[in-house]
Image 1: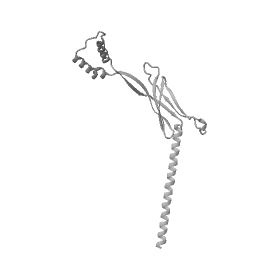
Image 2: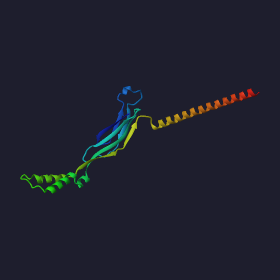
Image 3: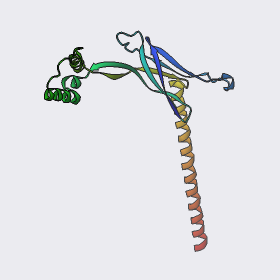
Image 4: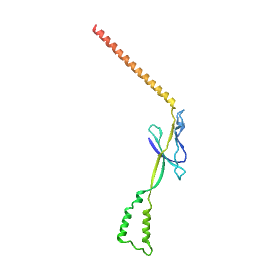
Length: 193
């Protein structure tokens, strides 16, 4: 058994087909197509011409291919409200150190005020956090096999055969009981008289 995650970039609904690699090795009457999965409508993110889709395909122990899930993946950048509101411990330490030693006077080059401005700008710029949003996408599976009417007919035929086997087994048990009764009555008659 194996499981694969396949990534597609698409803007419209599409289909995934599973086929036998070498059709010459198949028995007569067996189609090359194993299954076909039609991936339904999905939203395309704003600012992009194609959506990123993750498709999880599973091949089980018996050679049956199935789709586990189809999801759109959208990465969204959001401002981190906690980082913007609370100053970091580094900035607090710097402020306390500057306050304790007194604000340094600007050198001839004026480097000290620039450092303070850079620190303030860094503290003001909110950090952006990337969040991944996943949404399930509907899909239809079409596999090769019996249609519903043929399958129902096969189930009924199997039920009839099971009933026939049960009737034969019950008949055999009743015949054995009758034979045992006949032998016991014969022994009683022969032994008593």
